Length: 251
Image 1 (cartoon, rainbow, N blue to C red):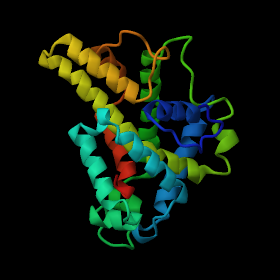
Image 2 (image 1 turned 90 degrees about the vertical axis):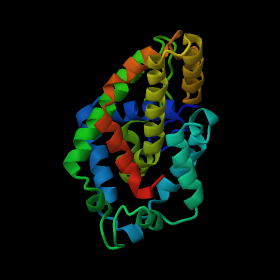
Image 3 (image 1 turned 90 degrees about the horizontal axis):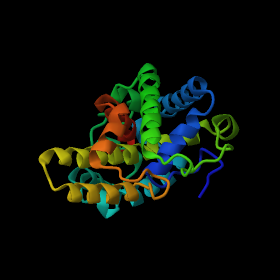
């Protein structure tokens, strides 16, 4: 499936990465700054008891479906997210935030409760996009890879009038990004435990496919250690930032 708008919801990690690359576009500085402004505006003007983003609801359910895959859900840190979501799926966003004590009172602001500043969003989102490009360049098969987003899916064409919807997409896929990165990092770490190479290789291939990277679009023979190096652009602080942005709806 090829998307012509950045307001379409990515269904897996591969499409989420393509979404970030499409946001960057030909004018990375301006487009990333615009997404940052939309993110901060969407979060900064909402108190916990009025935290409703209609565009986010669809993304939440798509993300949950993605996380329910056995290749992901069987890992403790992903399974914990899915369980929490299942237990509280009928709770309002405000109720979720209060339940997990993101903030203490319904009249407190989400951004203030998490200590997120506009500057932090700009700095960290830029790192997220940079890490995304490094990862994609290393994992895709040149000449075979097809992005999930067409040239029409550009910030100037699809987000100028719907900036908040695009911000909702990013917030909604944040757990998808975090869970995928953590799963890949764990699979790469297992190579250091001296497990039989064929076991770690098979696990990595199964995981990569579950994330949306299928042959021939992905490189052949990608070992766990190779994927680990491809993740080098994503730093610990960056993945934490991604999860913080998802924290206000507490998946």
